[in-house]
Length: 116
Image 1 (spheres, rainbow, N blue to C red):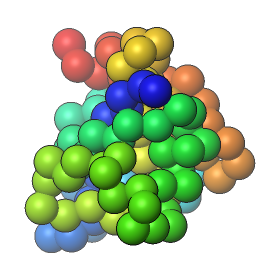
Image 2: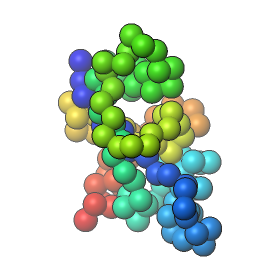
Image 3: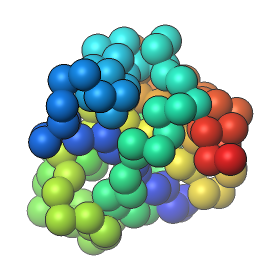
Image 4: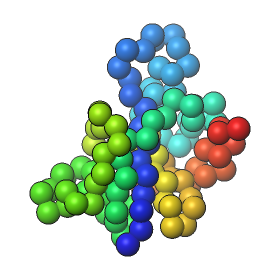
């Protein structure tokens, strides 16, 4: 069992000309293909998830079954289902992945660069 941290960008209350809006639009439609390190500051941690794999994190955060409720600890008031453009940190492997239209892409280097 590993611990995963989920981060999401939310579109609410954004000016359509802002970088935050562009970041959200780019990653929600194209995923890691359009991800830039400057977008990192627009992510917010929303939950901790105990799971065996990224696929299980995706399943738990989309199906919201009662039997999986113990796996998720929400740390933000708002959280949407896990989708394209969301970031999942694998705490065991020290890697960061972005949910893409098909599968996952390791974005660790870009994400870490955006923190500095």
